[in-house]
Each structure stands twice: as C-alpha cells, then as structure tokens.
Length: 295
Image 1 (tube, one colour):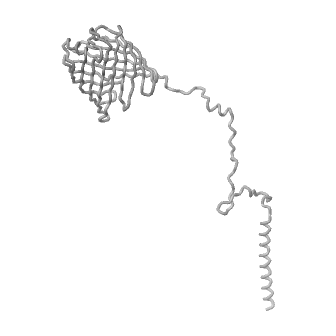
Image 2 (cartoon, helix red, strand yellow; image 1 turned 45 degrees about the horizontal axis):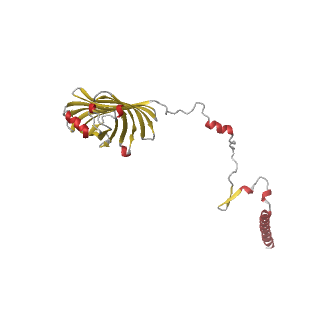
Image 3 (cartoon, one colour; image 1 turned 135 degrees about the horizontal axis):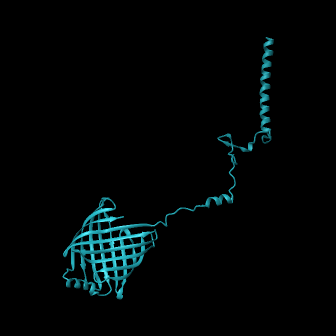
C-alpha cells in the first residue's frame, strides 16, 4: 500500500514538471526577437485568413534588362521600307449603255461608255456617248478628263470634250464634279466652254434598285443646257433636252448583264423648233434592249 502511494506521487510530480516546462517554453518563444533568428525573414510573411503566407517577390527571378536607345531604334528602323500599293496603276472600263433602240425614225444604236486609268487620287477619265440611226451617226462625242479625288466619294474633273456630230466637229473645255451622293446615287455635273463663246452644262444621275442580288432596276436622267443658239447643230439656248430612262437588268455575272427598258426623250424651246423643222417630234418614247459590261 505504501509502495502504491509513492508511485502515484511520483507520476503526479512528473506530470506537473512536464506542464511547467511546456509553459516556460511558450513564454520564451513569445519573448524572443524572431527577426534575429537565422534562416527566417518574418518581415516577408503576410497574414491570410489567420495564417502566415509568403509575400509576393519584389524582383523577377529572371530580371528584364533595361531598355536602351539602341533597342528603341531597332523597333522603328526598316532598312527595306514598308511596301504600300498607293502608287499602283489600275484601270476600269464600263459600258453602261450598249443598246438597240426602237426610234420613230428607225432602228437606233446608242452607247454610253466611261473608264479611267490611274491611282487612288489622280486618274485619267475617258467618256464617250452617241447614237446611230439607220446606220448614220446622229450624235457622237468623246471626253478626256483629269480627275482628282477630293473625298472618298467625290472627284473634281477638268479636260476637253470633242463633238463629232451633229454639224461640224467642235472642241470644248470641260470641268466639273462627279461622285456618289446619299443612298448610292451616282451623279455628274459638268460645265463646258466651246468655240465661239458657246457655253453648256450637263447634269446626269442614275440609281440602282436591287430587287434581288442579280435583278436590278436602274432609273437614269440627263439634262442639257446651252448658253446661246446654234442653228448649225440644232441647239437652242436655255434648257435644250432631257432624257429619262428605266432599265431592268439581270447580272448573269457582275461583268455581264443584259437588260430591257424604256426611255423618254424631250426637246425644249428653240431646240424643239429646230427639231420640228427637221420633221422630228418634241418628245419620243423608245423601247431599248442592250447589255451592260465592265472590265
């Protein structure tokens, strides 16, 4: 019994000594200067959700070299230069009207051609229009104009116009504007100064109405005004003549489109009087069949 009591006292004494040692160790840890402990930098520790986490490194493991003037120069220097295409020479030719017309005087062949060659800003424009009735040329002209783009949609043009018929050949100086107005309405306005002080102006416009992707209805209009009478050519001063047309074409390909339509031609004032003296009517409607081409 005495031996049992002694063993119990010894176990209690050992337990008390262990608890006292643990508490003393904890007190010593709290009192220590952890910044002085070798191998641990607690200033680089961050607390996250109550736990200590290492802070993000302030320096890259593979430092990026400092950018130098030579590096900057290498970015912008291009020994071969940058290839651009604004100096390329292009061309375009459009036969907007190449048609047979059922005129009062007989069968007529009419044409309206235009094209250009040049770059994006400056181009040489060529225009030609005319009419042959019963194998005889009644009206024919050619224009050569230098065009300069003043906006993405408009050009100013200047050059010469040469009339071959009616009457004797006549040369005009020409200048004007051409381009695309609102809603894809294409327009041309050209003024002319001819030999002998004759002046003239022409307004033209057309618009494409897409009934389908290939079936297109195109209304057109042309108006001519002259400054004074010219009996030799059957032209009177003021509003001379107008032409309105309506053509329905089918684009088999974008470059090839046959069409059918009607035109209304009318003369005014002294021009109408000259036409009457030649046995022609003041106004006339024609059925037209033709093809539209471009290259």
